[in-house]
Length: 388
View 1 (cartoon, rainbow, N blue to C red):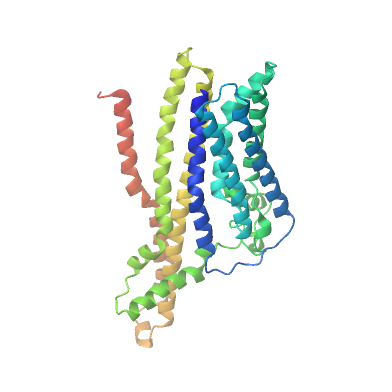
View 2: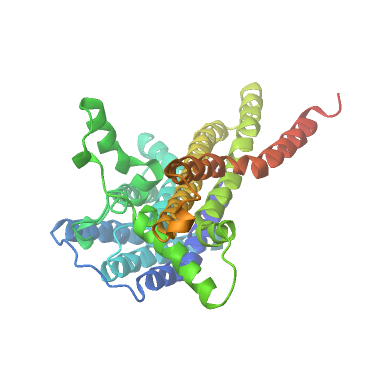
């Protein structure tokens, strides 16, 4: 990979991170706005973690600034790449202060940025290692090696969450770091406990606030009271779609994003086959194809599981709200109305009929995703094979 292409990749990645930083700050401030900030549990872990991150960011910044000054031939792309990486390091240091001030324990944006920056710096690491092995006295090799090491340290430190800013009674999912959330690592301890011994009630973690009966029933009844005050007829299915479909559409978005990685895999396999058959191809392309194939599969699996998580979350919230509405209605029935329904019919409404929402909603995404998958598959078959 040429130096110009490497600098372009670094510049684009860092510019994207810099551009998203104001949006991230705004999201942090708006989430906390109007909410009572719970008292954090405290401890020295947060100080150690933040100090380690700040030091690694600082050293990555220093070695990025040094790179253009030790090159024999400096181009504009070298200076721009060094400047954007340095600015991104400064912004990362600022983000740590924002998270500390607003008691945010992890950052998905920082986690993704430092991981991709570490990956993008691998070609420079390869050049540095080859130069050091060949006993090249060029100081650039040492600087590139140290820059990659501190970028890797910064990426590894994102695995841990700053639990000292969290309240003691928070759920394990809410306390998970961005990496743990993406990989469902927060669920690992429960799986190991269940594998070693049967689980008991004390082993089950608390539910997230968005799936509790109190929260979902409050949303439904608030809309019911609003419709009554405004003289409108309350429609259950319409309310369920309006008030509980946010996570459903988020899951649908993840399913569609997954298609990009799913259909990249056969194209990458084709490139690998062509690479093996052409000896004139540089070695780094084969490594890049293999790494990209691995990352593509990992991203596809992660998007698929998180999409299914959000769709099932929507189904459970709708089911909880429906059961709460039926239960509330049964408590307010008059004696004359109660004679029209048996206890078994009411029980079926709350158990069997409400459960159909849980069985139906998670699989409705097939209706939207399946045609897209079929069309993309046919287009790729035509592109590679033509009319047969």
